[in-house]
Length: 128
Image (tube, rainbow, N blue to C red; front, side, top):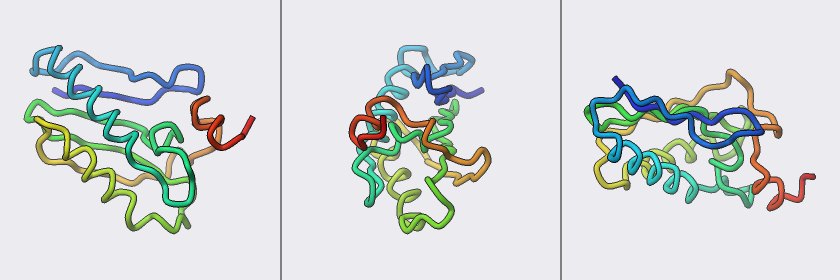
């Protein structure tokens, strides 16, 4: 079983938590919150907004063995940071106490669009 944190549509960018994990609910809640906080420390070097608020994180699965799978995308397949951002995400998530092995999967479907950004990212980027 896994605990899933999934970014939803523009109106609700909060986490979608499935509670079918063997980990205690308070532990999955703690891990989920700390993972999101860690993801918010990762910035695309060319964009002054964090990758979570940009909507680049599609899904985070916390497994029963505390390993974490992250499904993410980039703003474009030609992103100059394509080589470093997945490693930055892996390092950030792995820094959370209690997290095991971290696997970051870069995906292109669905393609990222600006409508995935939160209001916070829109404010930082002046994209109203």
